[in-house]
Image (cartoon, rainbow, N blue to C red):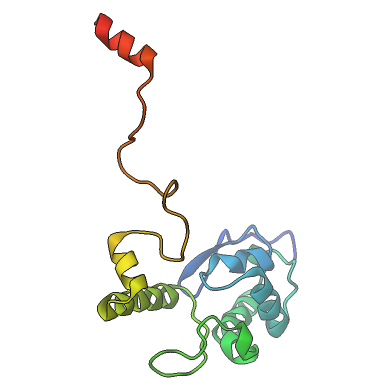
Length: 157
């Protein structure tokens, strides 16, 4: 890492633009599905310093990072992947980026299609995970007590 080189402000990995001014450990968290703990493992597998600035990495280092990100699900224990025992394939996979978004939408659509309790809650836009709904999570127009000062001003006009 030489400071005389020009910095790349954007580094593209997994169809995601990563900030070149951040360290490798924090820049990789810009990819959906990768946490800070995962970035440490990815940097270790790619043999890159976690504290190195992403924009100063050479092309070979970025390529090694890309392969480490792609092979992340194979190099970690099964408890660390984010898609264990997939419904259709029953395999352990680690999803990242747009794959993760699409699978989440497909899971919600499957819940709606099955007419499960969670699916119906998703359809109606209610809380899904058992949170309280009596006093929180209200949407739409504000309903409540109108203050007297506001009423007096409107009467004068």
